[in-house]
Image 1 (cartoon, one colour):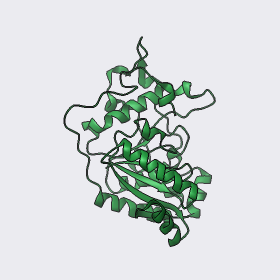
Image 2 (tube, rainbow, N blue to C red; image 1 turned 45 degrees about the horizontal axis):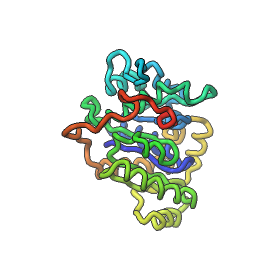
Image 3 (cartoon, rainbow, N blue to C red; image 1 turned 120 degrees about the vertical axis):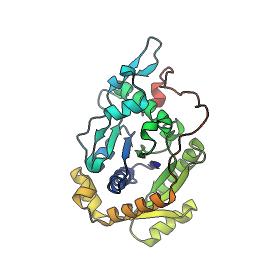
Length: 279
């Protein structure tokens, strides 16, 4: 499976993606978690808060300003070198987080990450792995090519008008960015059946899973830990476990595409465009 979690900021994407990654790993899958958000989130929800991000040194820049992987590595080799082990055997690869120095200080990490996600679809080293990506809020990364590995999107929506309006826009961007990829609705922070029905009606699609509003999740987030560790029997964990089971039953395995690859985008041997990649 090649999954990416998308939706509005604050909808609960990191909790869903991280918990899903660990549940799938517990079910025997090799899981690579991709955190492409420049703000903290997925590592805390995985229980790997001290994880080091992909360093700037993963790439080198030539005289023409083009980025290339360092030490003669390719995308898969770089991912294998710098992905760290998280709980339950999940491997986590995260982009550097923008700090006080601004986005220019993490330009190498961002471009390295972008180059990796562009090539994962073709990497035999990860052919039988499950990939779970946690994207930042909105549809910008999807529109700019950060979802080249994705076979199925999970649209996380809480039952608010702002979240539903954002979800409708993000759904359109994601499906245009990856024609043929599947997309499933996950209603999060639901207080009852009416919440799920409202979101389903607004988006005109059924929910694959409904994750309830859960005080256990709120306590875990306040403590900066994984809800799987803090409250493993919580209703949210149970709902995400059922989501994992449904995804395993419904999602086709990844197949490396045949034929010529599309032209390499910014970062893969092309001049860098930081305004488009550093987000």
